[in-house]
Image (cartoon, rainbow, N blue to C red; front, side, top):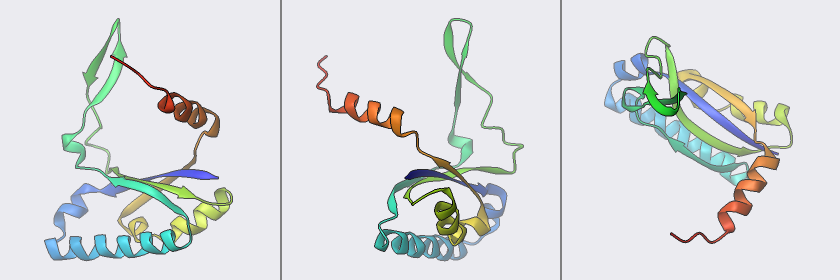
Length: 130
């Protein structure tokens, strides 16, 4: 099964860390990501810039509008996404509970929607012309 693990981080705590502390923490996370790779569990991932650089789109009336959010009063902000292969949700929980990033915030672990993702892959394999 595939899982999307949304990593949340307390940006205020991150900002209080020295550059050396941040670097050491990231390297610790990368080391665990390498362990996930060796077990064929790590499928990919992306780190995200600060939520201060983000916008939220919502449909209002007849158009998409940029609205408030992500909400800065929320202590933890989405900091990254990790794609994980695991036997089931319990296995995913076991794997991610050892990830150092848990100490910096939280992980939301969601099963991927295989039906929709198959449709996306099929669509992506089609040739589109302008």
